[in-house]
Image (cartoon, rainbow, N blue to C red):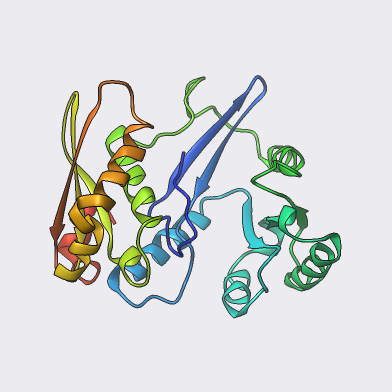
Length: 252
């Protein structure tokens, strides 16, 4: 439903995932992380996250068991309604029980309603968290048909898959300077444009003899239907993170 990486601000839009059971339907919304912005893009991501919070029945505040709870976490926690927020301590599979307890004790200072230690990798604690969230939802209509798991358009999803694979290849400032969008969808041809902000970044994304771009394309094609032809094009859009028209064109 949404891409993942170890880079900050990977999520740049609201991404909705739909869970439908016989007696309930829940819509989960992944938002950009609230952070100290350095660009117009960063400010818009914060606006997107804060706007989404106002529409949520339950907020899941995610922190990691294997990383200290820091100033940024406390800043975000201070903006959340304690009665509507559940703290989720992820990656408990990577630390011992004493560290889990220490993190929960530190997180308890936030004063939230509930605290759930989980592991997204192993699935530990996820079912209990899900049942808890479903039990807190108010009565309401079903917004999506059975079998629908997300409202993300296919073209957007393919562009995100490309960005996800690029994030595994690049370092330093390049991840934040990457943007992707599908510019042509005429099956089986899918043309995806990769934007960077500097000529030097273009060379990094393409790689020596095109090796980086080849690896990215191969891994993305493995996730597409058989017969898809994915074409990747790299273009420089100088300082796109700071330019309103570029951000509007990308949907940020």
